[in-house]
Every structure is written in C-alpha cells, then in structure tokens.
Amino acid sequence: MASETKTAPKIENTNNHVTHPSMFDAVLARLDVAAKLLGLSEDVAEILRHPQKEVKVSLPIVMDSGKVQVFEGYRTIHSTAIGPSKGGIRYAMDVNDDEVRALSAWMTFKCAIANLPYGGAKGGIKCDPRKMSEGELERLTKAYTTALVDIFGVNKDIPAPDMGTGKREMAWFLNTYSNLVGEHTPGVVTGKPITLGGSRGREAATGRGVMIATLEAMQKTGMNRKTATAAVQGFGNVGSHAVRLIHSKGIKILAISDHTAAFWNEKGIDVEAALKYAHTHGNVLKGFTGGTEITNDELITCKVDVLVPAAIQNVITAANAPRIQAKIIVEGANGPTSAEADKILNDKGILVVPDVLANGGGVTVSYLEWVQNKSGLYWSEEEVNTRADASMGTAFESVWYNAQQYKTSMRIGSYITALKKLDKAIKYRGVY
Ligand code: NAD
Image (cartoon, rainbow, N blue to C red; front, side, top):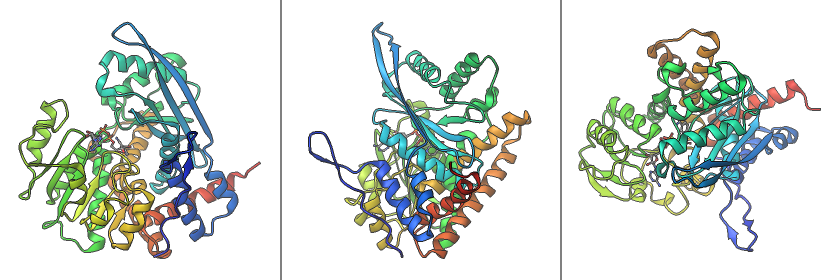
C-alpha cells in the first residue's frame, strides 16, 4: 500500500507550546497524499487547500436568567466548484474555526464521492446545548440564521443537522430565513420536520448509509453477517440508527456507548431495550442494565468484527490503534481516526471505510429532500431509501475501485474519487 499519511506540521501556539496538529492539517495531509498518487495539478490542489469563504459571527442572546451571553458562530464554505455548498450546523463546546474548516472540506469530498451536485460547507456554534433551555436554543438558532442570512440560499448554501442539532433547530432556521427573505423557502435547509417539507427517511439516513457501508465492506472481505459482531460508539442520530439497522441485518451488537456510559454484553445487547431506555431517559444510556459497564476506550479496542465510531472526532489515535481488534472500521462520525492512526490500522490490515464515504447517507437524503422541495413532489420512505441505498452502493464501488486501482487504502481512494471530479469541475469552470 502507498504511504498513507504525511505527518501534519506541528503548530506553535502563542505560548510557544507545541499543540496537537489541527484537524484541517489532517485533511491537507491526506489530500496531499491522494493528489500525488493521482498526479493532480498543483493549481487544483492549491485551490482545494483554501476554503472559499469563512465567516465568524458574535451572537448575543438573552439567557433565561435575564443576562446576556455572547456565543461564537461559524460558517465556512470550502468549495462551490461542483454546485451550491452543503453542510450541517454543529452545536458543541469544541466548535472552532479549524474544526469547521476541516468539516467543510470533508463535505466537499463527501458530496463529490456521493455524486451529488453540491460543494461543501459546515457551520457551528460554540455552546453546550445540553445545558441550555429550549427557549435559549431557539433564540440562539434564530440569531445565527439572522447573522448569516446573506450566506445561505436554496442555490447558494444549504445547511442540515449535525452533532447537537436536529429537525427542531432546522425548523427554527427555516422559519427565520423565510421571514427574513419574505417567502416560504423549504429548500434552504434539509433535515426539517416532515410537515415543513422534510423528507421521509432523512432522520435515519446517515445510520442507514452506515449499515449499507458495513454490509458492502463485509461482502468485500468475505465476512459472514450471520456470525459477525459489532460495537458502536455514540447513541445519537447516527449511532442509534446504525445500531438498530446493523442489528436488523443479523449482526450481533456486543457494545454500545454514549458520552455518559459504555456497555458490553457478550451475548448481544438487547437493541430494542437500549433504544427504549435512551428514549425514556433523556436520550442517554447512563443507568442501562443490559450489559457490563466498560469505558469508551475499552469499546474502541474490544473484540468484535466491526467497529463503528459514530460519536465524535479523534477517538482512534496512535495510542489505541495498535490495540484495536476489529477487522473492519466503518466511520459513522466525521474524523474519528487521526492521520497517525491511519497508518497503524493500514499496517494491521484493518479495512477502514472512511467517513467521507460511510456517513454520506445523510447528505444523500438531504439532497433528495432538496429535490423534493424544489419540485413540490414528495416521495414515500421506500422510494427515498431505494434511491439512497443505490447511491451508497455506487459510491462504495467507486471508492473501492480507486483504492484498488491506485493500490492504496479506502481513505486515500475516497479522496482520489472526489479529486477526479473536483479537478474536472474546476477546469471546466476555469480560473481567472
Ligand atoms: P448527536 O448529537 O445526535 O449524537 C452524538 C452522540 O455521541 C451522542 O450519543 C453522545 O452522547 C455521543 N458522544 C458524545 N461525546 C462522546 C464521547 N466522548 N464518547 C462517546 N460518545 C460520545 O450527533 P450525530 O448527528 O449522531 O453525529 C455524530 C457524528 O456523526 C458527528 O461526527 C457528526 O459530524 C457525524 N455525522 C452526522 C450526520 C447526521 O446526519 N446527523 C451526518 C454525517 C456525519
């Protein structure tokens, strides 16, 4: 296999301490490896190394206490070479310019791999949604939409849910945007409630895509799903649907987790019971009695055939990668594996289905939602799922093909798949 990683440069911070390489540097490290293997022109690579537009806003909100608190909001458009930019909005305490930049670039690659007519973007607000009331979150979402109204648009930049946001926030976004532009504009945001023009199948779409990617990877490696086992980290939108759907295909789930707890059950977690427990306990697993409590690190390294990190970034690192026992890793989360860990996993012969492919089911159904909003015709869940599953299958095959063709990992193969399309789009448009 070709060399997987180029170590990202260490960054000196203002106190002259060496800090962890940035997430965006990790994207660039992989981009450079893929660009070299592909023989991509330096001009195109240089364009893709720079996000097109980055905006940071300050959002003052009256909290329930009556005090004003100012939050940081971000939106980065990495590329519109293929079409209007698409990317979720994340609410989390570690949201920062570097993270949003990296996530926006991944969206560019993800949309190209999934064959969608979109570029890539990402947004976020540095906040802890779990510690805020519904009213505070509504005011914050409406302030964010208002501050960035000129960035968004049905044919410009279309957000969607990500970590810490869901259909509720998308409905607030839609309401504010439509009020500001003076007309109902459902296509400006995806992941909406169905009554407001959301698509059937969108809520489970990312987890469903993870399930399809898991089955494809098992088929390529000759793994029997009737005897296979899996562990899934994260029990939110992506993780809980991935657990449910992977389990529905006959794969035994041995470990699950969220930010409050992790559980192991050698006989198999009772998935229905876990889903019901989380549903009735504030969407968390703490207190679930269907397994032995383990740590999240133990989950990452536990003895299973398939590991699905579906929570946060950088959970598979050089520190735990040597101890990973799974044969296949399907990245439900964005950026769960560090660039250094990639090389270790590769050397161990673990098949990693990269995030830009594995979690592309969400943006694929977001695209189908946008198409339905534009046409005014709405499809059944079955029709949406059929289209999305076929699209995931095609994307998997193109990445697999490029990985084989260039004798590299699926991660670098996925970048190559995207770069081939981006190269054409940028050249057809021309640079002035
Ligand atoms: P979510 O907010 O619905 O759920 C996140 C889950 O991760 C929760 O169960 C939370 O408890 C858990 N978690 C948080 N910190 C953790 C920790 N330290 N250890 C273990 N678990 C932890 O978010 P989501 O929408 O499911 O997104 C999860 C990941 O998938 C993110 O990386 C996101 O960018 C990515 N993603 C989401 C979508 C989507 O459609 N929602 C699409 C593509 C990619």
